[in-house]
Length: 340
Image 1 (cartoon, helix red, strand yellow):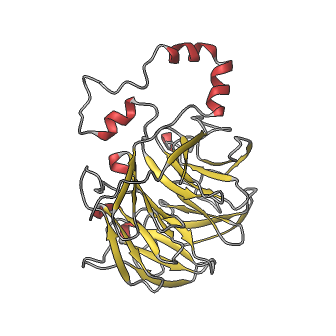
Image 2 (image 1 turned 30 degrees about the horizontal axis):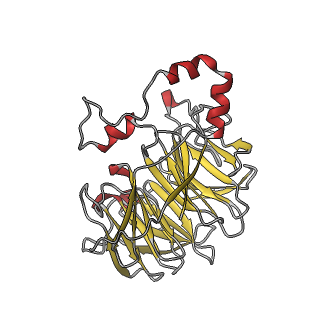
Image 3 (image 1 turned 180 degrees about the vertical axis):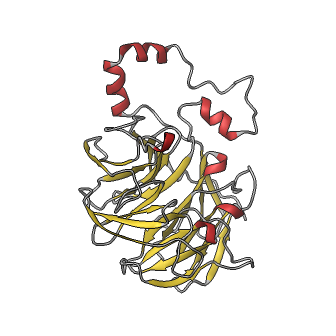
């Protein structure tokens, strides 16, 4: 792998969302999808306190920070969530949500109305064990990261099994894959969480290449959460364990690293404008200091937790219809948006 640094590939655009246990906001968001009409559907997992499911929901907003709706119901019944893990939109505009505890796929329309569900627990070819990522190809087939089965499963949109990808103990095999996406080249890109890399496969499931290796330096990965490919073929990786985004060329060269550049979102500014005491307390804190005496300079998690503009728990990537990169942060309950 070589390093190429002559061009800046990401430039900060805006921040969306804020922390809120219910209603307008996100609460430990786990995944998101940007629809062709520009609406953003953010899946919040909550904290599962005492089995209450508080905070679990889908929040709908847009890039102008208009709040549209929330929907979703906690539970184990028909089209309910327990541990919602991933969300994607089918080519015909339906929302598909995976639940990694119930091992099922829940189908809703964009108003949150139940349309159906499928999936069953197990290790068989048509069974799931902790489905943690979901995406679609142009034909409407569903690709699921079957995490504890160490592979990607492909189904029709009504749950008929088609094929398995990456199930191998050789170099081309996956270990605890997290999220995945289909690139403009129709190849499948998988965040291979357990192997600290990204793998690519063709549509027939043949292994093509891998990006990154274990480590903390440029071009190295630690438990990657998601991967997307832009129209130029550059590969954007949510380097979850290192609290950053990395960009690679399609041939695997390291291009850029970004630690996050967030400002307050419009929602957050509105919140502090009416919650004066909280705004005053916030004003006394230094949320940008980098020289923290008690921090471990090798612990990106600790550093990111103290510096507000940095990514903290980047778990989901999307390239929207506007060509921008949407980066969801679980621990700061927000989306950072970058121009590519």
